[in-house]
Structures are given as C-alpha cells and as structure tokens.
Image (cartoon, rainbow, N blue to C red; front, side, top):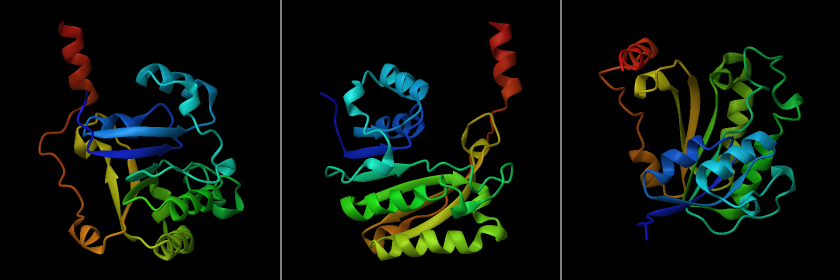
Length: 197
C-alpha cells in the first residue's frame, strides 16, 4: 500500500498534469472534474480510474468531500492574449467564481490554481485583484508567481501564472518562487538523443 501524505481534488483536470505531479509526491486523488470526453477517457486510462471518479461539469458541483489540496487549471481562453480577452464577460471567465465557491465550501488546507500569463497583463489588473480578493474572503493567504515551464525541466516555453494559497498564514509566508534549474532541457537535445538510439 502506498504512503499517502495528502489528498487532493483535481478540477479542470485535462489529461492529468497536476495529478501526475502530486501523485509522484505522495498525493492521493479523490476525484477529478473534466467535461471533455477525450480528456476524460485519457485520464481514466492513464490513472486506472473508474469514470465514476469524474465529478463532471464544475458549474453543477454543489459540494466537495474533505481533502487537503484543491487544484484547478481554470480555462484560460478569457485571459489569453491569443483570444478575444473578454475576461469575466466570457462564460469561461466566470468559472473562476465556481472554483472559488468550491474552495470556500470545502476549505482544504491549500490550493494551487493555474492560468495563462495574460491574467497578469495590465489590461486584466482589476480581474486579478478581484480573484485575489475573493480568495482572501474565503479565508486564504495567497501568493502568485509567473513561471515558465522551460526553467523547470520541460523542453517547452509555457509561461503561466500560479496562484498558491494556504489557510495558515505561516505557510503562505514561507512560500517562495522556486529557483529555476541551472541546466535547461531543449527539445533538440531530446530529439538528438532519440535519433541516436
């Protein structure tokens, strides 16, 4: 039996990026939430989960069972510089409210929310301030960081905002932006290694 250090619920799970990282660090996923059929099938196959573990459409979830950590890769099209940048005027932008509602209802010890870097763009200053205020009202102390996955061992530039919050203020005060790795991995290096095998 594996050594479980904490439990988590995986909202907007996609195919399981958060799940993989947390499970590799002692986390046990209780449930996930996803509406894309292909993503659901891939998630269930990758992690050997029954379809019943999918909570489905977040707008229809009224409550979550007890858990330690809540993750959410909230849909980003509303804030993406590649999109129309409609923010909260886009239905997908409103999903932040549903996410924070479930955070407030379930009160886990901590959360990690992820979105595109467009959310920190000056055009979206009020929206980010609103999200952070709602998180504060839910009883959490939060910090946010803009990170590029390339700096942490992924052979791809993927810049995202991560909002990380804790019920306990002392943990929020200890939270720091992770130091980038000295050695970066480039896609060309992987393809070269693959071609040589």
